[in-house]
Structure formats: structure tokens, C-alpha cells
Length: 111
Length: 224
Image 1: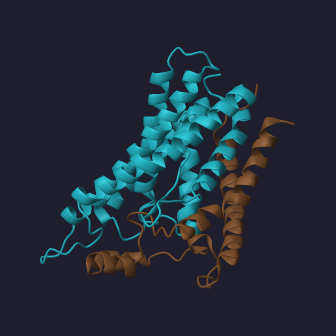
Image 2: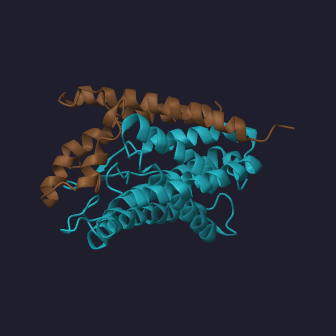
């Protein structure tokens, strides 16, 4: 088998395993990454909500916020894991299409 | 390490967007000269790998989370300029589609993870593995060290960007307008968790994949 084919399969395995990135933090009661807290957490941490932060924090409505479907925030880990995998598939699909397009524009023609 | 919207003030966001415009232009010129057509699929796989490895959040029990980025790995494979492009695409998609990293902070996040990380890691790899045979263990260890230092360089710079905000932007009463933590808190926090935990994950991922690819696909490496 060609090595690139093996690498694509490897990526597929990583996609299927990706919910570990959701389940392990939950299991070990780990919170947000440092500096990536939501508004409510900030208020708990420092006692007030910085004005600029409050204004900008809702600037962008991502279609799949935190690699989950909108409205699924209260669902359990199995649902969120499923959404995580779908997010990985969609994200990687888009990344690959963009990079192939950039690669076509930038790579030297074969002689 | 994905700075969200609202943590950096307009001056910082604007500065890094401007800087990244120049770097992206330079990157596309340089990659155009050096990227071979058969490397294009590797560039795509690299960007995809970087995207998915960042989804593997690693917990510090009872504390925060962090993740590897893969930026040094891509730089060792394809060179730092190609790595800049691959990681940039991953970060932009993460910000726009998944709200992971703010859209106002795309410039800063790209500078940290798609520029500083691959370039620092790349030159450390080159320095340590200088004159080592292609399949030597020294190259694998060099890759691990480069991954560790590259991720930490990016994390510490992220801490500096956070930490400058209360000094740059605050109300007359002294309340911060954006990130509320100064350099004295932000830098040790970002440096500490990456030096102690997340850097090692980047090191292991970088070294293992380099070891595997050196054996399986030596033709993928720009050093040939």
C-alpha cells in the first residue's frame, strides 16, 4: 500500500479516537484551557467582566461551536462524542480542500 | 493556546493581522518556489493532522487542558514556510467553523502556532541533527526536543500577548478591558503547564511520527 494511503487511514483512526479529547478532560475534571474561559467563568475568577471582552466575546457565531451542534450543549458525552467526530470529519474535509487548492496554485509544474 | 475573541485589544489584534499579511505573502512566494507537485498531498495531510491533533485535549486533573499542535513536525517534513501555510489553514477553519480561537485573534494565533512554533522548532531540529545520518536516532531525538521547545515558545509568547492587555487597555478605575491577567500571572501560567505537561506530548508526537516516516517514507522529507 502507498504510504500516503496509510497516512489517510491513520488520520481516519485519529478522527475516530478524537472524542478522547473530550472524554478525558471530563473524566479528570479539567476545566477550560488557560485564557479560554467563557464570560461567566471570568466573572468568577476576577470578580468582574472586562467591558471590551464582554463586547467582543459574542462577535462571531460559529456554526459548530466547540465542535458540537448548536443546542446540544446539555446532551451527554455519547452525543457530544458523535458531534465531535462529525466536526473532525467536516473540519478535515474543508482543510484538505483548501490546502489542495493552495497546493495547486503554489506547487511547481512537473517537468 | 487558541486566544478567543475579547482577550486581546484592537491594537494587538491589528498588529498581528498586519504582520501575518506580510508573512503569508512571503510564505506563498517562498513555497511557490520550493514546493514540488508531489508534495501537495503531504501538505494537505499535514494540515489535516495538525487540525485533528489539536482536538485531543489533554487534561491536567482538576486544572486546565492543553494539546499538541504538530507545527514542528510539519516544519521538519516540508520546511517552516510550508508549515506556516498548513497550520494557518487549520487555525482559520477552527476559528470560523468551530469558534476555537477568536476571529479577531486569528493573526495572533497564527503568529504563535503557525510561525513562531514551526520556525523555532525547525531551526532547533536543524542545529541538533546537523550532519547526523538520515536514519539516525539523533534526528529522532532532535525532532522531539524541537517539538518541545517549539510548543513552549508559542505558549510563552501567547502568555506575553495575554499579559500585555491589562497594561495596554484599562479603565480609569484600573479594571482591565480585555484579558484581566498581567504578565506576572499569564506568562508563568502558560509557560508552566506547557513546560511541565503539554510540551512533552508535542515532543513524543513529533519524535514518533518523524521516526515512522523516516523509515516508511523518506521521500516525504524536504531534506531528502
